[in-house]
Length: 422
Image (cartoon, rainbow, N blue to C red; front, side):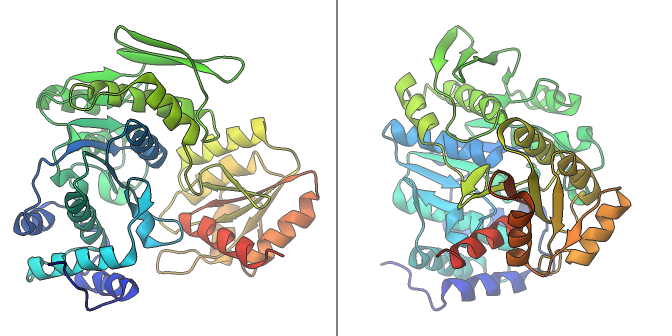
């Protein structure tokens, strides 16, 4: 009998926010206990787990797309969402519907007893519950925060992929790349491949792989890639070499690197889930991800909420967009606002600061003050609509308008662009 829910999706999400005194509480004890009560195994279908500071979402989406092109039934779990919560959980390319999510939440709530799960732990268990119900053959899981103590890590990955290690979430993961790398490498498992998509990873990542006994595939070592002048590219992994691959459909030079890592991870899992080159090419051609270098109604949308992502966006703007450029920026208080602002301001002619709601959001005035401390000039705007209108006026028909910073900024821009459409 299917589980019936007593709450709407919005009611469930509000309820989940009240259960634990902290919105982020790392640790596997709670989620493991409830997973056991739900009968969720620590080894499910073939599992690719992806951690890293940037590139997790596009890598996970590409991997899932390639597996789908090969005919496998695929579950994809990512976070955060841009517009609606169900975006986080996809089965065969379709987002979970509200009723299915509510049924999963009902089952989890019944099993948890007095265990105070966090919002993210509820979502992770719901994804695994729905994937089991759908009998997926592959599940691609994006780590939410760190790796070692993230709820996703309750599942033993068959292949682990680490995109990169940057200085983000320092309050929870540590103050150095070495500390943060050790946390992210916690997804590695003995005897199961670990793919490193960074040419110079922290020593702590290499040490973790050695200590646990995870065979390594390293960018620049066991696999590599090269971009051709026409935008095509070549890739090699061990004795396998592919030439004249199509460019990833998602814009940005970094997507070649992300794709190279994904292909290496899929190559590492070939014994359990065989693939062909044309499956990979179809996945590359169909790659789409909301809010990542996305051109939407005349505005470029890109989540760039840390220094590494801001550098990638700044490079893309200089290479691929027309000047003059106007940036609409909204950020959360716990992000490196000054560093992001300096990087983006170097590729922009105008910068408009907008406020974000919520306990972590910066008001427009607070954002402007922190940017000023970093030597970055900006103008404050009353709201996202005001900012987009002023940005358009500033650059005219020939220039470029960009909405960036937090996921919340991108979501607000999408909603405004939809609402103001003629």
